[in-house]
Image 1 (cartoon, rainbow, N blue to C red):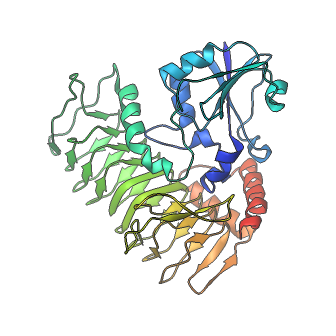
Image 2: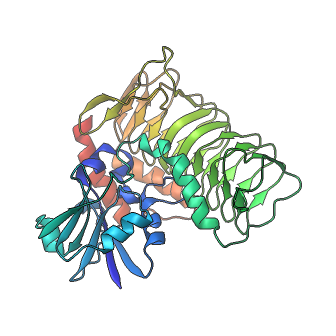
Image 3: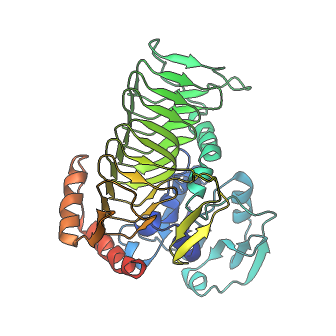
Length: 399
């Protein structure tokens, strides 16, 4: 059995903060599944593990054998790339045309020392996740690809006649444009599949009056509340609850935006809560190019984008009627409340408003996190606490 180790590229890991503070790059959800799960689909009968920063290793341990295939976790798999990786000789690294490391076959010692016997170059730059905004920019394509893989050869649950389905229901090959997993509930919704597929996960709920335009995915146990307006390409990770208006949003999992308010071109981590009436801008009033906070550069960098909304790290909260300027980056464990626009970057473990921010003690953070996670019957483990303590220490350098 092949031993696959999905490793974090250090530079990319830094570019993807705050989302990668608490997870490997490959555990970021883009489309329906995360990148790690995509590789598991393409490579069958293999042992998978991660290679990450030391503070994450207890939660994401590495399985090492005498011979391993190391694969960069920010790169999306495809058949041609998998074929190229498994053609590698022992000690050989696969590079992109820009000379970034895609994969290596060999020992952990040689990988750590970058001791490659030889290198070979892949014929093109692989599709990859590099910047925070790539998460929502790539979501359309990856959602369509994941849908094809997850629905192939399987039968969807039937769609209740209380729903209104708009558009041609089938692709050109005759396959259905919607797939509903076992236990999902959809009643009285308007679903438009004109522009792509819609995936409803196991035990997900789409309530009456919801209007959803494809491509769209609601993963297991997620919930769309009454009257929600959702545009593609939007993904709701497991156990997310949403209401109001969303456009091209990726919620990684276990987060709530249950009430009215707008999110667009946004990325929301796990265990976040966005209060009723909260709205985040995704377009500047003067329509100029957007700049986004970059952690390693310690400043705002040009994106080349006209649309970019809220980026929120794990366990962050926004109170009712909060407002966020275009391309606001919120770290881990942040609690924002009050009227007015906070600054466009709020460091991790901060609490406050436009009047000012103060540090959140780890005792207070753990108490809140424990209560939040218990609502989904998930325990805040000692390993989780160690990770957050490490994140706090790292984040001090970005305040």
